[in-house]
Image (cartoon, rainbow, N blue to C red; front, side, top):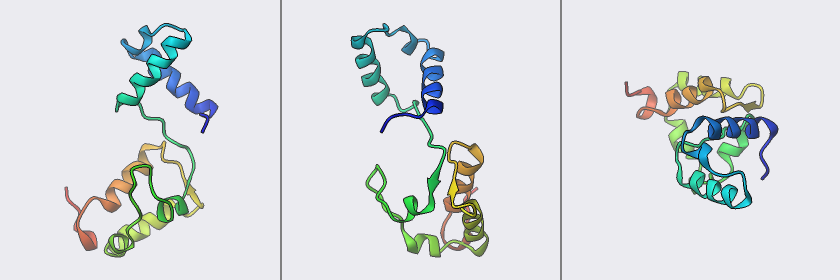
Length: 117
């Protein structure tokens, strides 16, 4: 899947801001080596800006995981309400730190709202 203009801009800024990545030559061989390096570099993250709830609850993730309804059901009423509120517009923007923190807050603890601090 091709990157969006926003993702391309973010990736370019990431590469230019990294002292070792910015040294790769601007050639086809350099691009190939850079791509290989980025695949091995866990710090290179490009967030999507729109994800539907069904993509979380219906599709298998890239890591081979699936939505666990029993885990969701075991959340507290407040946690489930927070999750529902995040998707109240139909999709979320996981590039926003507040959305990623919302997921961490909802799913960080044990069952029925026992949130680990």
